[in-house]
Length: 107
Image (cartoon, rainbow, N blue to C red; front, side, top):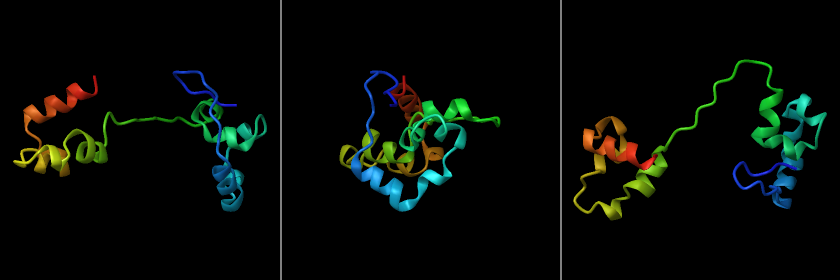
């Protein structure tokens, strides 16, 4: 069974997800090199799939995404004067101070 990357606790897929796996037929699209070694539900976890990838792969995980900026880091309710309004919806509109703040959040 797959384990959480920091806690080591086993991750379990809920019965709802197993139903989706069955009804949507997702298992047939999983890597055979993974499903031949373990059950298909375990092949949804990256730590079980990545070692079987044969092609060059570049994995990127953004420090923060649009939703996080809009809803968590600078929600409208926390910005009554609208200083973050433009930045919230288009990071290219952020001032250098706002970019510096966002860079500090991810550290």
